[in-house]
Length: 329
Ligand code: SAM
Ligand code: SF4
Image (cartoon, rainbow, N blue to C red):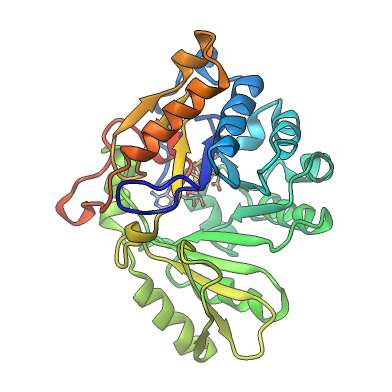
């Protein structure tokens, strides 16, 4: 397994398949004026498979497909099939807003996808449409049901908590775990990209300590669960007697950089070394220049070796070049 210079085991690759999206969540994409990579710059399914093979070769074990909205890629099923067939990759997962899952979930399961995270910020019709602009509750919920029907387990729901939008809705979201074996995870806002979304993220931050207090006041005490792995970014809890899990992902108030196990690949073929910084290493040029698998693996190991640690959000340092829809969370 590749070790970085801080002795962290880096074995998890998050691949962004596109920087486009069918929604415009207020903290992620502006309504107009987002920057996109030219289409011919996006890695092809074959190029993505080559990076996945190189990653497996040097000890990566887990791959997540994200975006932008990964279900917008017309070749998504093919990409899943290619990655699921790479020896050594034991886990292929997808992060999505769920809207297109009713159409895609059975084919994705057939192609080898096993786990899905669906992003849903509220169970209130008006507020979800205000936050995840262009989404309707019915559409996202249909995606969640499609994910259940396709047998993706455990099903994880991601909820970004935004002051002035959904901070009171966390109670209804958490209540879902009483009956359902889902993991409902609350994510702290991060400012990325320096534009209007970064401003929303900074001004509307809600700490997970406040979110937890709100849930406990309404639903009773949360019992902490032991971590499933040292690199799990979510601190997990259960309501007494509940079927599901409540998770808190707190990159701002409780950074977990010391146990980070991630490398990111942007849709336009750069290894992005830390979510909250701009350092990148190009792999696309090598892929298009006829590099063999050994050279691709060597570039990935260089990226691992150059990974920084410790973000500096509290001093206003974050990405300037990339926004969340380029990096995929
Ligand atoms: N479109 C897919 C989705 O929404 O799940 C995948 C890409 S999205 C960028 C991945 C995750 O990032 C989502 O769970 C979303 O809630 C989260 N996210 C987006 N912008 C964020 C921000 N500024 N701070 C924290 N999380 C954010
Ligand atoms: Fe699209 Fe996901 Fe960003 Fe929302 S969080 S705008 S669904 S990429």
